[in-house]
Structures are given as structure tokens and as C-alpha cells.
Image (tube, rainbow, N blue to C red; front, top):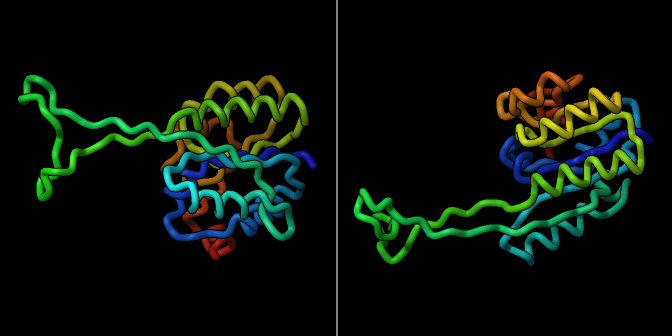
Length: 188
């Protein structure tokens, strides 16, 4: 058992617009790498706790009945948008319904949590392969350290087009879930 599997839920959802099966994804990863996943984590944020709770409970079911992910949920930050002073200031309003002010909604702490747990997991479990379902260049430093200093093999899951060029040089492979054969293999 020498695979660490780390999922940025938002990234994977955006990469694979259709619904896919996390159990099938786990099995495909293990088959492709001829190895077993040791530790697996899922990171996301959600402002719909009942929906998130049902889905998260499913993600935590151990294999073979579930994908066996440890779920880490973070918060969303909401900030009302205003025009710059040079454009008159004031709130940015919906053109058809001026009672609705636009908000910037963003995840908070997901990337930091993923990087922290990834490095901590490696230090405790010493897996030899990292499967990262994330494409953000913010993961460059911990990934570079794991690949270069710890001799970990990196495999990216997602889409090469949506993955930062800062991560690609460290990867042994990219499992593109938006293309065949992965597309059919993980579909619900």
C-alpha cells in the first residue's frame, strides 16, 4: 500500500463536468498504478451543509462499498462587490433585478489544508506514489519537495489543459478524466 491520494473536489468537479463515480476512480487509479491506495483525502468547501453531508458521508465509506476518502470541509468567503470610486462607487447590481447585489464567493483554506495534509501524510505513511486530483500551481513547492527530495512518483488526475504548467514537469503521468479511456471508466 504505497499510494497517497489527494482530491481537490472543486477542481475535479470542474474538470469532469458530468457525474462520475469515486469508487470507480479509486479502482482505476489502483489498476493504472498496480498498487493500493494507503491514505486518501477529499478537500472542498460548501455552503449547502445537508447536501454536502450526504455526499461526504458516502465519500467516507471504506472500500469496496465506498471510495474511502477522509473528508476535510472548509468555509466559503462571501464579499459583496462594489464599483471602484473612479466608476462612481456603489454596489454592483444585477442588470435585470437591481435588488440583487453581486458577491464574490471563494473557497478559503482548501489549498493550504490539502498541502498540509499531503506533507503530513507522507511523513507518517511514507507512500511512494502521490495521486493528486488538483491542478493549482500553489502546490508546486510541496510537490517539488516530495518528488525531488523524497523520491515520490507524482501522477496528476484531471485535465492537462486545466493543470498548472508548474506541476506538469514533476508528473510521471496525467490521467485525463475528461478523455478516453478514463472518461468511460469512471462514469456513473
